[in-house]
Length: 434
Image 1 (tube, rainbow, N blue to C red):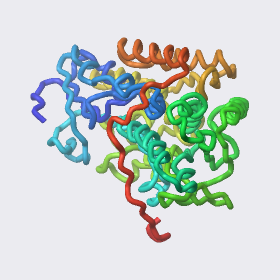
Image 2 (cartoon, rainbow, N blue to C red):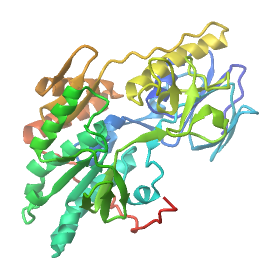
Image 3 (cartoon, helix red, strand yellow):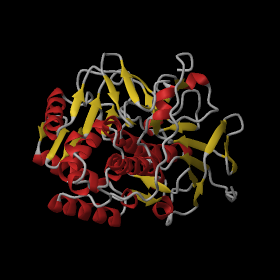
């Protein structure tokens, strides 16, 4: 990797997400050599991916070059690559760009879509965890309408304009709201020769309420907002299969659709090489102690979504949210310097600042530790928090101007098929394979 030798301790960070970037900033000029490795050369602001997918924002406005974040850091190196394995016996990482030894290793690889072992759904549906995936969704949405114009088959037209979102968490809810707004204000102008009123947006949730990690009041209000926008909320429905044409469920309901976007769950994006005892299988997260040290190791840490810190108050670990990742990254940056200097590290305590979700124009729900509110004020709070959290003044300015323009004109001008998306061929799997 052409990293120069140094007399200083070498800290290797894998991942440039919220936790990795927060940690890197804390380690700026702290008397250590720091190497950050990521498969992309940019940081992605994932909470706004759904706006890229629905044409509200361009991809560049929610991405920020990692090299620009660290360009003024001394003895700091960024490498573009994918880590494939950890060699813990020799304190070494293996990657597609070479090997590198470390004194301290931090795994901040984030999360990936969890299909719960269903290979058929994994193959035929779409996920939305990265910018390329969001651009694929945007292209497919628009391509479906272009194809719907060309077909004389009513059933095929229905399938092309029936969008099914599986998972009633914040991502599914926000994407459903954005699609509904496109249907109500934009698509009827773009496609006057299509009956856009027949377009369906189905949100499928396996539980008895959407946004089940938020308060019941916020959950009910979000469902009310979605229903008014024209979204069909299907609760207590678990998707069991999707062959590329028809969704099957654990009920009598089936959905004939050409587009399934899977937002039903996430799991840690782990790296092979650690002892299996350090891993929680069902969610693919590394067990860490109160200092974010991976179980069984003194010099290997995990932060963010890939880390699972279990205690009395959090039997399932901290939530896989940006706030938890940021807080862990900030504290670990201080703790590693303390460890290098043989000082006592500070245990991590999660400060739950609340959660929120937007459903559309003037519609959002916010849960704070002591207050719950919704509507226009909640929507402005949601916008302010997300705008403030973006990296880079230009990104903040571009997103703000886009939001103002979209609000005034009720439009989304990012409806561009920049890179056509070719769907995978339909594949069926036997029950044994699933």
